[in-house]
Amino acid sequence: MRSVTYVITKPPGAIANETIDMILVSGVMEQPTTVLFLQDGVYQLLQGDSKYRDTATKWSTLQSFDIENVFVDQQSLIDRQIDLGKLPSFVSVVDRTQFRQLLLNNDLIVND
Image (cartoon, rainbow, N blue to C red; front, side):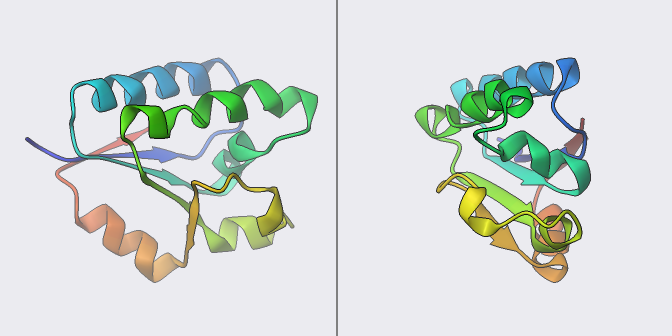
């Protein structure tokens, strides 16, 4: 089965909810799935802020669907002054070199 990477670049909103649904379908279909957050997409992972909470809670369901390859771009966090302690425990931080390698290791890339 072909592997798919979802690249999340947009802040929380209607598109975010549709993207989460697509990713969960990949998990249900047991498709090898990777999720990469960068740019303003990193805001979707934040807990505690009322305008982001709903999206962050939905992302936390990924592990229930065996989607364990979830990464966030370190430079995007630095640029937005986001503390690593605010991220969910299921997310791994990667630098740009690792980020590019993750993109190369998949058959299909879907951007939000």
